[in-house]
Image (cartoon, rainbow, N blue to C red):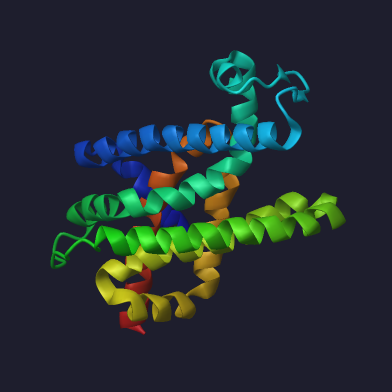
Length: 233
């Protein structure tokens, strides 16, 4: 179910409508990544001072480092962590459009739905993003206590959170908030596994730029697959 949903998402990359959303999503993903990285540099400068020096990169001078090649490599490295909140933030802006493109091609007989009001999706995304950041801050203690298992804890935790968010927003388009919550409970294990499989490539620099949009398409397919299972059962 999960792999077939992913391969359907990848196969649609040639669809002009989907490709447009994909490229817009990649552009926004890069912009958000740079924004999170700039925020990271700002916090580091405020915490340590203007004389902060990092290995390989050297002295951090804010804008200079933000635009420099050394900073580019540092940003690519940090993207293994920063792409998780980026993926969370992007759902409110693109999931409706991605889902519409997916449904137009693969589920044309379904009735059209009204897009979820932007204020609702932004509110939900802010809540999810706050939960995700808070959970990862708390998880730092586990990373320190169990360094050998840190990457697996990271994938499991963020897989759970991202799967929950992406499925919830995809399902809300068709089932409403209460129905989406119930569907999420019924397919808890599948959603968590799908989220983990999404979190894993998010830690791979450059590849991770494609994952938020492909993830939105994959979870749209996954939602419809779970509905077929539910109706057949």
